[in-house]
Amino acid sequence: MTAALDLVALLGRTVLGLLRALGQVSLFAAEALSHLVRPPFFLRQFARHFVEIAYFSLPVVALTALFTGMVLALQSYVGFARFNAESAIASVVVLSVTRELGPVLAGLMVAGRIGAAMAAEIGTMRVTDQIDALTTLSTDPMKYLVAPRLLAGTLALPLLVLIADILGVMGGFLVGVLKLGFVPQTFLSNAWDILQPMDVISGLVKAAVFGFVIALMGCWCGYASRGGAQGVGQATTRAVVAASILILAFDYLLTAAFFS
Amino acid sequence: MSATPRIRLRGLRKAFGAKQVLDGVDLDVVAGHSTVVLGGSGSGKSVTIKCILGLLSPDEGLIEVDGQDVTRMSRAERAALLDRTGMLFQNGALFDSLPVWENVCFKLLAQKRVTRAQARDVAAEALAQVGLAATVGELSPAELSGGMQKRVALARAIAARPDIIFFDEPTTGLDPIMGAVIDGLIVDCVRRLGATALSITHDMASARRIGDTAAMIHKGRIVWSGPAETLGHTGNAMVDQFANGEREGPIQMELRR
Ligand SMILES: Nc1ncnc2c1ncn2[C@@H]1O[C@H](COP(=O)(O)OP(=O)(O)OP(=O)(O)O)[C@@H](O)[C@H]1O
Ligand SMILES: [Mg+2]
Image 1 (cartoon, each protein chain N blue to C red):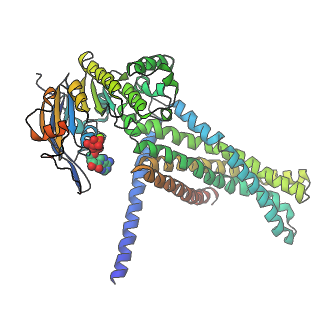
Image 2: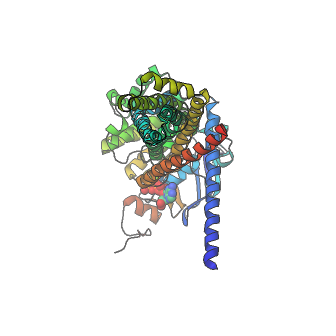
Image 3: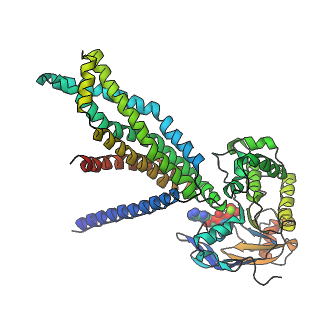
């Protein structure tokens, strides 16, 4: 009996803790967003983070997308050949990549790269009093540190995903033509015929949401970190884990919203 | 003496968990004076300053700056107060993503009092005051020695000519000659520029040089305050033991023998 009660209590505490965290994150995000519409704006900070996310994540995201497209073509060939449905391979590749795999895989890769870096940098600034120093130097840390990162994440990820979409389809195309013996024109026209603008747009909207979530988790976990190098390490882990889970959760919600 | 002190603390209390760090601190900082605060390591000196600046919120007590209650200030009022305040953090707290010159001119740039083109020259001047060459401005803070970082942080704290300045251990980690130079700079800020300074120090020679008034914090309270030049022979056993660095006396270090 008491064991059961303990379990209920534990469940209650967990739910309350989650709700509290949700409330705190929402307030944090709302404050940061309010700084995006009130001057001064830190364009230099925004540019730095935009380049860091969009440009320096490009190799990782490009390779991920390319290989994913290649694997998709190969795997679906194995399956579809049994039903003589090889012509569907191009559609499978192009739809999976634009709607789903492009945004999600790019999001997860960037979460590891950028979410961790943001949490570590802001966390270190927190534990070495640099965030307090910003306040004493007439600069709001939310405006200077958080707002530009959120904006950069939200704008940079769609760009990355657009490139990932193109490379993913190219990966499928290469395997299809070079290994599976498709005629290039057929593959491309199959792909082009099935593709709707909404497929690409929904993927880019997902990307924007993921970019926001990654930056938000990186900033929030860093901002809330306490207690030296160990605390910063924990903040980094937390940022990556939280961002990854939220990406998958939002992916489901957005897919349900777009295609049902 | 002016009627309202520039900074007035009454019954300031702050605890971290079960640990009562500040237990009723009363302190007056007179406008245009330099006040030094002494006290053992971990006695809550840095916490006191952070409470005044609003970086930590006290559990109880009154903090007034120019008669205004800091804890009840609006965002804009607090920003206005911080605009004319300078702070040297104990660990420097330099921004390691920015070069030294941008660190030094950070507040001036934030307040748009200099352009980025002028900032390097302004920074070079400020660095010269703390005995650093202009070339240091191009380095990143991670490339500096501890003492150099401290001096850059000091230059940053006073670059915007604040009229209230907090120095958290301005001379620890400096050689004695440089320490004396920095003390001179602090005195200069107060005497020539008319600023009000609140400094924390462990260095008695430095305390006598920069302080008009001294106060000692022990067990979360101010146990003594008086003219800084009397340090060492104040007649208060606790302060004299501290100032002369004696092992035996009313202050017992919690050591296991
Ligand atoms: N953020 C914090 N969280 C928990 N405890 C803290 C925090 N900041 C300070 N303390 C505690 O408060 C006490 C006073 O700290 P403070 O930094 O004010 O000491 P200090 O007087 O400046 O000492 P020192 O001369 O060594 O710098 C310490 O015992 C410290 O453990
Ligand atoms: Mg201290």
